[in-house]
Image (cartoon, rainbow, N blue to C red; front, side, top):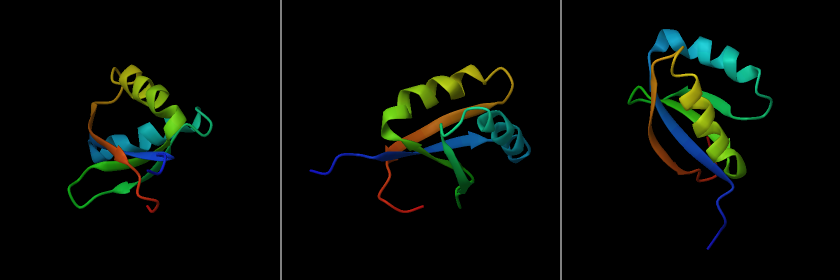
Length: 80
């Protein structure tokens, strides 16, 4: 079985808060890669496997500023 290298996090977030999340995330060098909003309206974020716990903690810590919820985490299949 292949080792998981990256995870996709799908985040429920208001569209107007996405730019705020991007600014906050820029301060955390190489923590996550904010990709796009899916057809289901969820923000897709790609995270290195070894930083998954750190990213989950980071997102939890900024909930005081941004209303967001991680609704799904799954292994990244190797494409965006």
